[in-house]
Image (tube, rainbow, N blue to C red):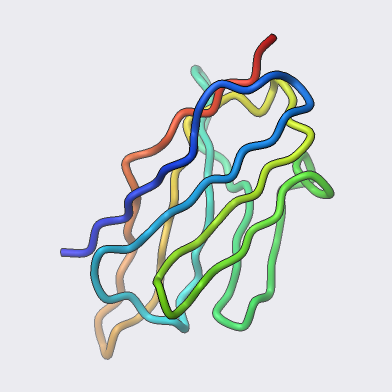
Length: 119
């Protein structure tokens, strides 16, 4: 069973930066898509950013220009660099990996890491 382990969350002041990391403990396809989602209290989980195997990226409008997603296929790791953080970025951030290994589809989630933006 593959596990996704996130790290890098914490408390930061408005305008500050954090870098989240997510490492897969087992085999996932380098051709799969990896993404970051977030969920604030009382709100639905939302897609923050995604990255394809070829490096194509997509971002929620609310984070464009401030967040950057990247991945290291050799290490099965995805990152989220978050700059110019705002209080409304406060949420639990979850890593997601979807793809195919042979004929088997997978959809894995991490346990989440808390990001709190507050002065």
